[in-house]
Image (cartoon, rainbow, N blue to C red):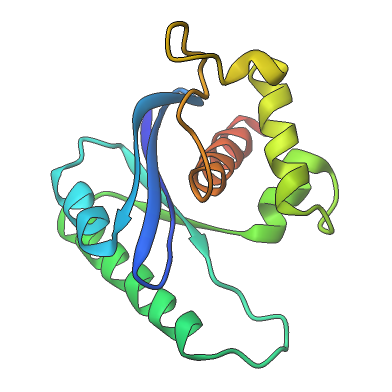
Length: 154
């Protein structure tokens, strides 16, 4: 099964494809319009998006801009008849780290461990399964891995 995992942002989003739970070499962080185009061109079986969730704190315009983009992503997927699933950051942290209090660094470490430790990134000459992944792409990978893990649960 091939999925498109998205970490949405205000003006830019990170997205990557995973196949049977493994990251492919197809990923990018770029303008939201490019992420939207990736949805229109994808051959993915499903799309999973990190969901913006409220925890009782006031939010600003940036959060609403991000939410607006997630709606556009969902609509593009619906036009292609591709199912969309949503996962919150805490769901991802609990799945990968066993705690809702896990920070981004803990999630990154869990992903490195999952795919072979510090050598999982590799080098340009010998790229590992996580070669080239940085910044917000870690969140897209975490969302995708969590989605696959949940599919395996009884």
